[in-house]
Length: 348
Image (cartoon, rainbow, N blue to C red; front, side, top):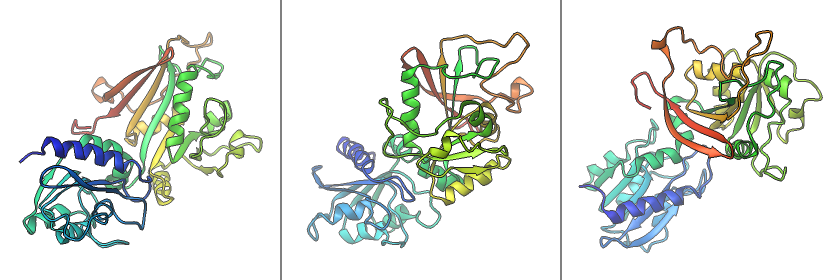
């Protein structure tokens, strides 16, 4: 049995409820309880670590027995373990629901298994409803669960002929104000922003997320500087609201593991070519943002070239890094290409 139209509508609403919850160590989850006739009986979402999970939040709004025979529509497979709260699978069993629909499976070793538990007691279970939408909402949390590291977005801006700067190293500004505003909005959505010391010394970025009027977004990313060179005392990053982390860039997995342990789930790698290339080369980029400006730079009269990327370990065309283009957007005169690397199996 596949999901009915009413159940699909309920799942879309559950996803909107999930987005209301905070992004943190726990996933954003939404739930809708449907009567056997299809009308909504209750809804809920997870409000943060230590609070009731979405299913329990929704069930708490019903009188005892009111969910008997109902359908629970949940964006993530109900958990099957006891942490700060009890297992949602048992809460659904106790409520007497007849059917459970969820979007994506719980990848956690301890928390998975809710669907199997529900089936054991005769509850009808349907999975995969609007799975792509749920995965997009939980991309950073899922990356942490599956790979043990934060979700990494690598961004660079380039000319139409693939240059990140002129021969003298100047790069402000290749792209226009609309593209720069988009970058700052994405900075505000990230937990950490990463640059190399080369970019820091050349451009002196503040690494803050700023609105179009110059004021700071409420949420600011944790600034991270990679490289062995000293950060000057007068560097703009030293005025960031958060104390910046300065680490060697020789072991990127170790850096990401440290950021994960600090509770960081979404990392925005903003430059420059050396750092961006390293993340791509080591297979640590989950998303790539390429801002392309309709301008040509070429290389300098002395042969100096400033490409947007450096070595990726591609010595023959068979080793090229194929990407899947998710979207192409016009931002003023510039283009934003959002792409994702393919895995070695050809799947994204």
